Image (cartoon, rainbow, N blue to C red; front, side, top):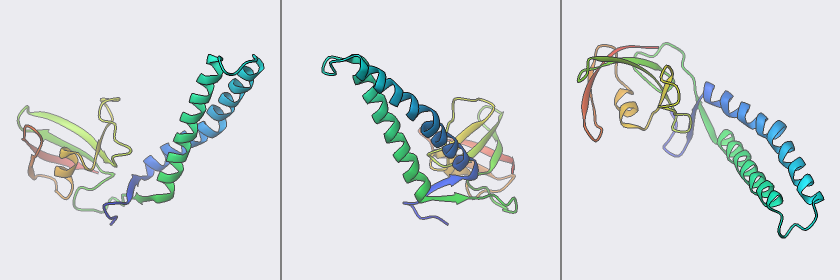
Length: 160
């Protein structure tokens, strides 16, 4: 398995980063270059707010492009063969929160990919958050204590 310094990604995470990278290269970068050219055409650059804004946007885009390139160059891709008997990164896990009796389904991903709030129907939690760490290595039917600020117990219902 990967060591602590490796960047861990699921295959889905790699695909998302590649999609974002292509968008930045093919759409965002050309748009900011055009905005810079238009701002230069206005004349004096020393007091040109459009030029300053375009330069800032260009720096932001180039920074993100470099960041994605570095992530992809150093990433260890975790693949789920579906044969594991214990929960690991890239698994979708359904568990019962024993304190609320609520059934919850989450996907365990890397910290780079995690997005626990944007889509309530597709919760992606980090493998290094309290819940992710608690789930990894466990099996269906096991009761686990999640060591969060306010610890709570869960029971694993299923994972795939």
